[in-house]
Each structure stands twice: as structure tokens, then as C-alpha cells.
Image (cartoon, rainbow, N blue to C red; front, side, top):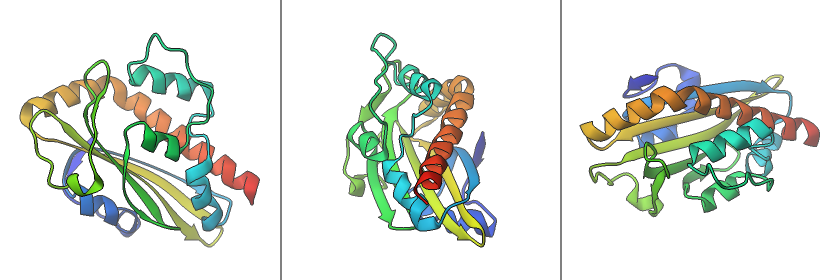
Length: 195
């Protein structure tokens, strides 16, 4: 778990400008990256089309984390488009470079309460009792392929929410990191197959 205001390091800065625009300070952050042996444009295309929960364990963890214990786990592909229909709001996109989603909710509640909003409402939102979450995917061309990364930042709107989120994150953080790494692998597999 990390707390901060602005990341340092040139690679992190180049991938986090949209993150900085929408959530420049945060209570919790998580970053993951990998090298993909495919051109950046191919990797970027797969951001939208890859099944992010291709591994059955990832799909199951998503269902558990979403509080859907009694519902059967769907076998439909879980793409970024599907996630945007499920509560994540597309905040911004720089085609070929990065995608940024946002969510306002109470993830510590059993049913993972989500508040619907328009992208323009995200930055000024400050109602007590919520967590503001931004989540990006970024691609960066390298001499031998592409660097694919994802970063999640969370900012709670008050102290009580921060305490609740920290308790929630204590248990779910390792699973969330596992899911993010699996997502990167799914995108990389899609890009490798398409290139």
C-alpha cells in the first residue's frame, strides 16, 4: 500500500499524467507493469478487446469482490467496454497511449456500492462517505516491444471512509494485485496472438 501526492520517476510520470489530472493525491495506490513482445498499437487495441478475466480464478475473484457470492460466475468475456457498463466511468482516453476509468463508491460494503456519475463530476466530487478511484492502462513503445502498465489510485473523502477502506484493502489488496497482473497477462496474450 502506498500513500502520496505525485509519483516520481520519468516512466511513472509519463504514464500517470491523466491520473494526476483526475486524482493528483491519493491514500492508496497500486502499480503493475510488464513487457509485451508486440507493437504498441497492437497492445493498445487489445486493451479494449481482451477478456480481462480469462483465467477462471480471476473471474471468481471478481465475483467475490463484487459481493456476488450467490450468483453464478458468468463466462461472458470481461472487457473494458463491459466494465464501463458495470459502473466504471471512462474519464479520459488518449488513443494509442492510455485509458483512464473512474469509480465513486463504497467498496468496503458487501454489495460494493457504486455511485453513477458523469466524467465531468469526478474531480469536484467530495461528498463524505465515499472512495474516489481512478484506474488506468498505459502503453509505451520500447525498442523491443511495449511496456504495458496499470495503476490504481484511491482517495477517500473523509477520515471514516479512509479507515473503512484501509480495513477492506488489508484483505482485498493482495487479490486486487493478483487480478491486475492477470489482466496485464490477458492483454499481453491477446497482443501476442494478434501480432
